[in-house]
Amino acid sequence: MSVRNITPVKEFEDILPKEYKDLVNKGPFNNKKSVDDLGTFKEIIEEHPHCAGCGVSLGIRLALASLPSPEDSLVVGTPGCSFFALSQSAVNYSNTAFGNQNAVATGLKRMLQIRYPDKHKDVIVMVGDGGIADIGLDLTLHSWFRKEKITTIMLDNEVYGNTGGQESGMSMKGRVLNMAPTGKKFDKIPVFDMAEVSGCVYGARVTVANPKKVGQVVRNAILIAREIGPTYVQIFTPCPTNMKFPPDQTIKIAKEAQKDQYSYKEFMTDEVAEYLKNI
Image: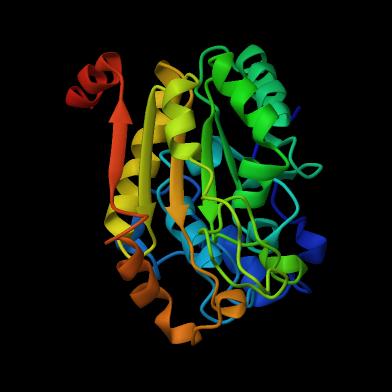
């Protein structure tokens, strides 16, 4: 396994699109960046294939801008809307089979601890609600039961966005969607509460309407996972395509959710509270 960052060879540099050159020359590696610096560096390509107003792509941008050490981070994803931006980002990224991302992240984290015993290598799962709450719930929970030192970030758009608009376990009860014409019949799965009782030492629930808060909790979650145990961040990333609202209303919809099912919420163990006092 190479210890260097991979960059294009000189022979092919001239034929790369400018956006990909910028990922190398203006990416977040070895730079101290945060959500306050968005627009001054390149975290993903601007022509990513997400829909206009996509909450997931915004959530990804905020999360990537909050990594404590981008050059020492490995983001693990799974098929879904999040794949489109993450596969074209300026971070190390690994895609998995649908739902087994926390199992793969576990193996990668253990391998990196052996390969780099004296250096922190952050492994961050970053996938949608379907990958975590539905198809991957068992593997997610077991990574928490085992106290794996990884951070899990759910990009919760409350729908299966890239396959036509089926209801997700995270959809709100009663929500009418393209493939749920009579409305969802059961409550939103309480994954946030499950994280607290399943071994996560820290968790936070936020929306893309509060970028600084997203940046703060993502950064904290990753730093805590390095030292103490598994952490969880749940970000509301509303989907204009399947929820049928104008793409310029994404932040407004997220703000409205903050008054109801997505009010800010946080939990932590006493050990984490003490740790956060000292960083």
